Length: 167
Image 1: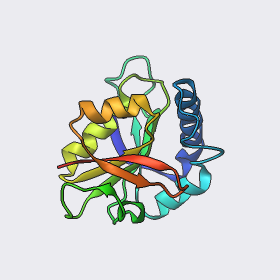
Image 2 (image 1 turned 60 degrees about the vertical axis):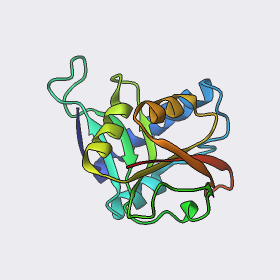
Image 3 (image 1 turned 30 degrees about the horizontal axis):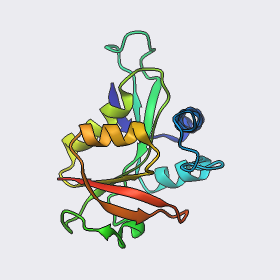
């Protein structure tokens, strides 16, 4: 697997990835997060414009998947997240950080979401992420990758999220 910046041509595959992920989280009991058409095309376009959007693609080493196939996607802003300004709890530090947002895998190759988060950890020293308390698969991955629980924030849609940080 390999991480690269997202191109406009990737949007249809990313929308399919979001649809797959939305169905997956519904099937695991999370009926709140990613409601309606969020995230959608406008979110991807904005992330590309801001140079925050990445995709994980298959390489020749990934058996069963054609090289270049999109396997996962995520946004990685490196500017302060306004929803993180008010936390019921405390961040580990106030240093500059990147935030993992809108991470989703499409199920074409197991471990793609983990690969994305490990890539971020390998390339950034201060990382924040949040997720809904019902997103059990993401909570498990966050824990396995050594993120520390910091408290609760309110997402832009006015629903609570559990917030984590890794230094």
